[in-house]
Length: 362
Image (tube, rainbow, N blue to C red; front, side, top):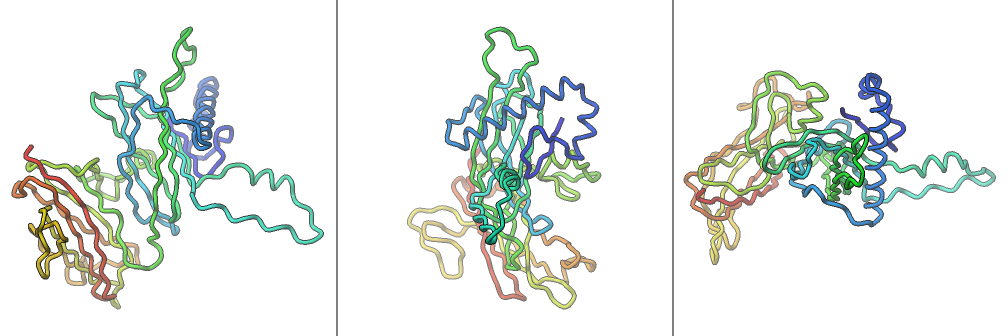
């Protein structure tokens, strides 16, 4: 069962439209048990946020986050964590995430002279409000680390993300049974502003693979699989250590390029590979830094009126995307830096994104 919450005070007011019909079908006893479960989780996060030590019975670890442009001047942040399923004997965890803005709230203005303070209104304002809040009950299994991906949507800014994975409490725990296992994790995430009109890109997502989707996902499937985008689903790589048998697959979206009179951009993307080499100095015209030597590059990608589909129109919400899938068989063992250079020829602006990675024999 999934309970979706956004910027709410949670627990006893679980009445969102997307969960009401599900709850109505549940046994009243089970509903109350889940409410109690959520209350306990929220209380634990409150305690950790106040400075108490965070338990980590399940080896919960933050793996990655990515940021993409959402609707309504917001940004979409899919993220992935891992945990040890061998420490979850029941095979299911309650998974809760809370997103808290690190920007202090503006001080409340004093009431006009002669006007009394509204105590009830003040009391309501003291209830905690979060940028995002949600909970899922998720099956986990397998021999290795289990990955869980979820998402949140917020405005640009800096946030503390609290993650909880908890073994559900049994209805009638055995006598002297240990408390259910729980892990709490806090991660700070900085979310850039993609709505300011300046040339920018999403995160460069390093993909383990990219799968086509035969049909659009339901809202529930999309919530469970936040890296599904349109007609494809990205399975993100959790690190940038590759073997020579692998390929380096990247994906990103390009935001706010200037356009011509037909709403077509003119953008060039260059992919250059530099290998770490002690004592090396960059040659003129090469993108590499001190301590690197130029290894290779791919053909530039040109995204303009000649290469894009005739119906492509940024004003209509079409996405400008770029990516590469580069086999690593010819890469000698070592450390590398992929430099992605994005040039908006109409605006005469350039930006650079970097991806460090390692190649090993096997």
